[in-house]
Amino acid sequence: MDAVALAKIQFWITIGYHFIFPPITIGLACFIVYFMTKYMRTKNTYYKDLSWFWVKLLATTVAIGIPTGIVMEFSFGTNWSEFARFVGGVFGSMLTLEVFFAFFLESIFLGVMLQGWRSSRISDRVLWFSSIMVAVGSVISAFWILCANSWMHTPRGFMVEGGRAILTDFWQAILTPSMFPRFFHTINACLMTGSFFIIGISAWYLLKNEHIQVAQDSIKVALIAGIFFSLSQVILGHWNSTMIAEYQPAKFAAQEAIFETESGVPLILFAILDETNIYFKIDTFFLPLLSILLGNPNATVIGLNDLSPDIPPVMLTFYSFHGMVILGGILILVSSFGVFLLWKKKLFGNNWVYQNWFLRMAVFCLPLPILANELGWVTTEVGRQPWIVQDVMRTVDGISTVVPAEQIFLSLMLFIVTYFILSIIWILIMRRIIRKGPVIQEVNK
Image (cartoon, rainbow, N blue to C red):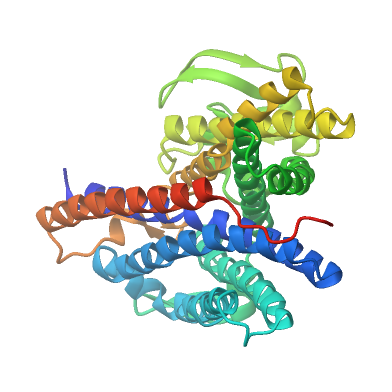
């Protein structure tokens, strides 16, 4: 295997592994703000104790997420030095701002929260404010990362001079056409992840008949949030797809498996295909739903055969995109069922037929948003190939020319072993915290 392929695999593993953790931290941080706000309003220590339980899970996840993110950024200067040299003038300010907000805002105030629960010298108001800063810091950190990544998809505000991208307009560079659709789509996915993370753990407690009050209060809030964010994701996902259709037609054609240019295009729901042909498909037949979703029943979609040779891997882009959509549909159904049971007052009590079905599904759904996030990331990044900067720099031209394939392979193996060990540590610590459960001093609300 050559150096380019190995460098791609290493970066995919590095960023794919890191991307497990930020959605959980962003989602959990926002829920902690909600529970801390309830505490500040009621002065009932129950909500403070409830917040502390979720803070411990948040801190454990952040402890893994931050170092894996650092490795991801370091790889720009190791395996992708030509890319780093080319985009350094554009990315420098964005990544600096991301580091500032990730470390100096999110991390510092998370430290204040961890210390505050152990010390009476830090007031409740400071704890509450710190919880807000952790949530805000994590979202702003994601904003700058997505600014940099969106620039790679729809680059603006630069000129090429001496083989390097020179920043000419900072605001155009950060507010590219793909920025806001991708930002809101991603942040909403993070909030979905946090919602189903809390739903799954709370459902597990209810199945085991442990920490009933905490589980019921947590799952109520998370269910309402989960159905809202799940349905919102349909709208935001559509917004993102229309942006892709306009600015990245090859990616759009690949994720929808459109090989021939045509008007009034039906939406493919399922297909068996390879890189050049569709052998079996289920679509919307005579209803041109894909064109309708683009705003016009007669809208034309440019096919892959008319975009050759600069097209992405079709199978991986198509199946990852449709896998993400399927998982999103499952989450909508499960959260809708849970909200229905909550509305009918059959979620708690002795309605075991309804409870068992839903609670088991809720536990099963805990990792599904994480998997959906990963599939969405695969769609986004693989769908941009063969470009590392869309229509400006090819991926093969961004590789480091001085790092041989053998060294990349060795570091790849070290990363895999390290990430496996980190995963085991994270799971064991999270399992221990969850099994111990929250320590509640005051239950009366």
